[in-house]
Image (cartoon, rainbow, N blue to C red; front, top):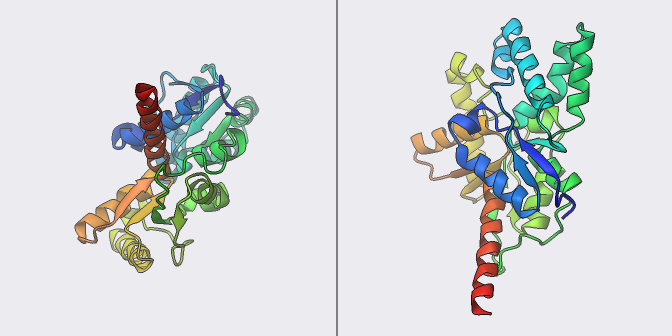
Length: 265
């Protein structure tokens, strides 16, 4: 592995920390399987995204300063997050927030050099080989991929998750119609405009069902919460999960096979 022996700090994001710890665990499982030492920053709270989106800029900047200071104090080669929203906030929005504060802007720019989203990190830095996490029995899962707004539009992620799914894991993607359409979550926007949010969500789920796949994969916890809730409430029977969970499942499958082989020998 290209990152064997490297230290990687996990920035979980509020939704992973509070609602989906299994997604954070999945990221750790994959990173450790690649030989990285995973560390957890201390004194981490919200990155400030929710406050910024709500127009509470003073508190957004306060949380931004706290996040920068906490991550600066973390001894790690890289800082990785499975939340595309948090990564976009740290890499892009902090530079805008602190544009009139030269000292904090410099710190934000320096921090940004170590921060990456999970899928980019695996493809560009870890360089996970093609086929490394293929199913040991040759099975190919058929899934559809939802491009989160901040993953696609802010971070430009498109090829990275597809490479991991199709090339690294050997699974099949049925492309989601209208894949650039928002799922309707939008953070607090879905609370403020529930009717519009529901229409977008229903459209997204209907498009997903049209692919014939039962599994929708994405890189953003807000989308996962929204689409899971909509699928369950509408009795659609769709499974909505984070790409890290698929990767971690394959890591465990390979690990179990290796353990069984050692026992036999």
